[in-house]
Amino acid sequence: MGKLVLKTAAVTFSLLVAFALIVFGAVSLVSPSAMVAFSDSLGMTGVGAYYSVAAYERSGDIADLAEAVERSYDAGHYADAADYGSALLKDPGFAGYCSERDAETQGSASILSEYDQYAAGIVSSAQYYAAEKEQALGTALESLGQTFPQNNAVIYLAAAAMSQDDTEFCKTLSERLETLAVEDPAEQGNLQAFLLQLQIYCAA
Figure 1 (cartoon, rainbow, N blue to C red):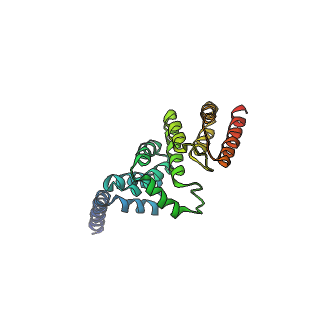
Figure 2: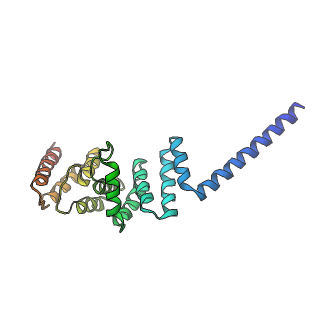
Figure 3: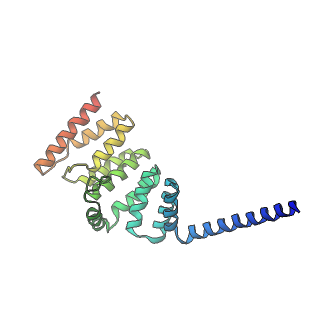
């Protein structure tokens, strides 16, 4: 009798597990955005990043694209952050989306710059970590134009290179910045101060 009860319990448990897996797979396919939230609730950052990419692929919405880039970068999925980040920066709706995010994140402790510089910063850093160093330089410098605001994309990129003790890359970045023509006097001061810090780091 006891063996029959145990056998019945084992079969029931197996059926419940199989059903749960089927439901999990179905939700994954139908609503990857729901799986992002579920992954967050379990602290599964990497899994959430993968599902955020799937959510963007399903919707094509720029907000989902930006979330996929940010989550991929935070999870250390640098190839995805670089690839989808390039698409984000080239998206026709990027400027408008940046204006929306600037209004949302004003005063935020996590995004200290305007969103366009934050996005270019994490994308160029992701490219750097993904061994796409020339592309990283191009992404960061192109985002500046003739400006050098505080907490800009180049500063994000320099921080990534410094985290790897990559003085050669920092020297190259310094050389490129020396030719940058900045129109605003205050921002020119930002550039000169940053260049001095960068050159001190390279000489150490």
